[in-house]
Length: 262
Image 1 (cartoon, rainbow, N blue to C red):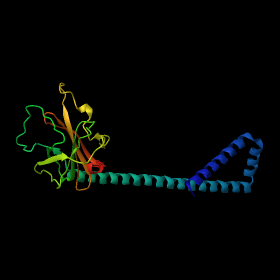
Image 2 (image 1 turned 180 degrees about the horizontal axis):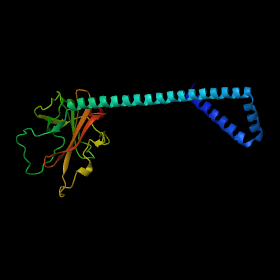
Image 3 (image 1 turned 90 degrees about the vertical axis):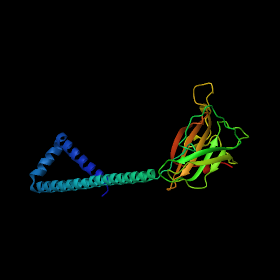
Image 4 (image 1 turned 45 degrees about the vertical axis):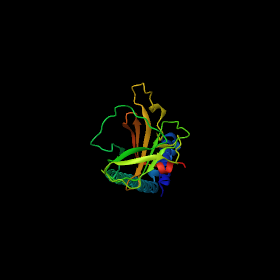
């Protein structure tokens, strides 16, 4: 018997019982018939049998209801157990991911001598520049791609500085000096890395007369870990040669290889 049929049956029984009680007190004829029927031994026996049958039916209904409630509770407990196991697996995977996550950052070529510049710098676009990067994470970085882009809107005659590192970069390895040259790959100003513009936003280019930092270019680095997950590091270069972090992105959907348009 389905849950719906059981509810219908219980409703009918309750309705019949209510109608019978109301009729007994409202209708004198029905009340007299009931008294006559119960005064007859045959009627009394039939009534007792009917009450016993109804009691049995009620017990069956209560038992079935208990079974439904028990099944529901068991199903909820099963779902909670599955959810807890899924959360446990996810936490275990996240711990494994974090234990082997690379983290690429720009760094000085010689970390033993880091000095501030005596005067602001400028970038001569369409020549060549170099950026020293280092893996300060806990895992090897593969499929490393880099792009250096100017403030938006980009000049029509300027190609972005692009580079693809030909070898993986282990964790805690020595800094790598990367030379970037203008490449044929173009990037639209509308393209984003997890919501972050590839080009330096205009609002980041402050007036040199202001006290705010004056940024010259944006560096975007994408790379993968040993699990194939894609990550990104985004930094802006100030005119004092300072790399200011914008974002570290984890498990992004697309990297620079998938964003670039020939």
